[in-house]
Each structure stands twice: as C-alpha cells, then as structure tokens.
Amino acid sequence: MVFLPHDVLRIIFEQAALDDKRTAVKLVLVSRLVQYWIELILYAVVILHRETTCRAFLRTIETSRTKTRAFFATHVKSLCISYDIYNDRTVRIITACRGVTSLTFWVVPTTWHTSIIHSSPHQEIAAALDPLRPKRLSVLLHGVFGSPYPRFHLSFFQKITHLSIVNKWEDWTTWWGFELLPCLTHLSFDLRVGPRSIDKRTAYVIARTLYTVLSRCAQLRVCVLLLTFDPAPGCTADTISKTLPGPEHAPDPRLVFMHDSEPFLDREAHSIREARIWNMAEQTVAIQASGAGLRLLKI
Figure 1 (cartoon, rainbow, N blue to C red):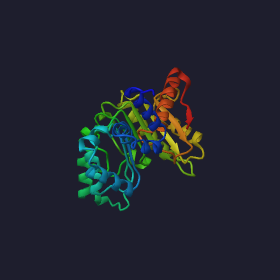
Figure 2 (cartoon, helix red, strand yellow):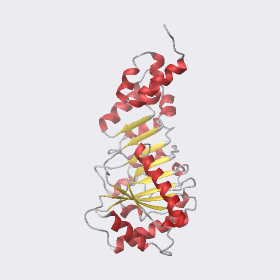
Figure 3 (cartoon, rainbow, N blue to C red):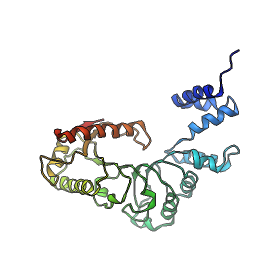
Figure 4 (cartoon, rainbow, N blue to C red):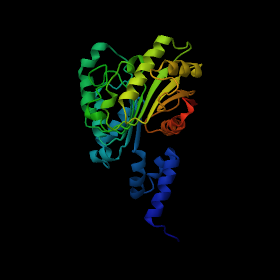
C-alpha cells in the first residue's frame, strides 16, 4: 500500500474542493484533518443572497463547537451581502468577518424612506463596516454611512484598489471625493440605459462626472463605464465621448466603454467575471494610450 505525504494529499483534496463545491461538502466527512483543509476553502468566500442563508451562516458563527470567532475573522476573505440588510443579523455577520479583503455590498432595502438614513440600523451597519479594510468593493449604496453620499474620507475606504459602483447614474453623478481614496486604481460605474437612448443633457452630466473623476484621480489606471440594458451601446458611447470636455482628438485613454450584454450574470467583487472585466479594461487602456482612440468592448 502506498501512503502519500500529507502535503500531496492536501493539494489533491483542495483541488477537488475548488473544482466542485458539492464535492467539497462531502470531503469534510473524510477526516478531521481533511475537514480543516476543506473548510478553509468553503469559508473563504461567503455569499448571502437570501435571508435564510444569512440566518444559517450566523447560526454557524454563533453556535459552532469546532470553529471559534477567530476562524471567521481570519478565514472569510470574500463576503457578499445582497438582500434587505437593515437588521441586527447583518451587523453580527459583518462584525464576525473582520478580515474580508473583497466585499460585495448590494443594499436594496424593501422599506426605503429618506428619513431612514438617521435610524439606528443604518448607524449600526456603518459602525460594523468601519473596522473593515477591503481592497475590492462592489457596492450599491443607499445611505449606509448616514448620508445619501458616500463618505470616501472614512477609513473603511482607505485600502480599496478596485471599486465597482452599481448605483444608478442619477446617484453617482452627484457624488464627490473619489480622489480621497489613496489606493484606488480601478473604478467602474454602471449605466443602465433602457429602451430609449440617453439625451444630450444626461450625456453631458455623465461626461462631466467622468472627466472630473479622471482629472482629479491621478493614480487611477482604469475607469470603466459599464453600459447595461442598452440596445444601442455604440450610440451611447459615441454620444458621451463627444460630450467629454477637452480636446475631442485626445480623450483620456483610461476611460473604457464596455457593454454588458448579460447584466444578470454574477458580478461580485471576487468573481471571475469581475476580474475579466478589469483585465479587458486594462488591455484596452494600453491600446487607447497608443493613440487608437476610445473603443467599445463587449462582455
């Protein structure tokens, strides 16, 4: 009988777990040692799209006999929260997962009112987020930090390198302070167009915002305008690019127009698809910097 070294066995088990999550769940039953290896993979990425999943994960955090609080604080690296998050369960989960480096925070409250930004749940969420220092953030913000505008001066934002903003354009064109993010190199704005083409006034507002961000953020390497639900993305990109301030023949090559033809596919901050968007944008910036002009990509 041949006995493989533990290092080799670990590589085999970890690869099997990475290839298929259902297999990973079964592998934890092999032995305590294998359970430890596989749980590091299972808990590295936590995706909470439903309230039921949130309750189950919180129950694991607070009642597990085999995993301490330090386990979740150390080993949960990517956290995705996308449901009506304004409750104490979300606060307790965020508080437990202090070591996340990739955070997807799509806040869609079911009972939204402008006065809610002053309510206790928002303050508790903001307090729970404050100690976090994510590097990659995909966010749909609605007054989480006690204001309708993101407070980019907060320490929560200080280590972010990749920021994807999913809010509608009417929101992010009123925001300011992107230059306060010292580590920001990659920035993406969603633009949901709809069946009608954008008018010149809308194009002007968007173009001014993009120009301001690019001119103030010298460290920014990529700025993506992601067009979604757009039947004529070429026309949209052309309308906005012609409205950009400055010389028309020399647009900022860091600006990348991209059409998302499948906007319902996953785009969490840690996802392969999100990484692909950034990689494509980086390559396009290099091409545009050589004088090729602005291009429209499709994903």
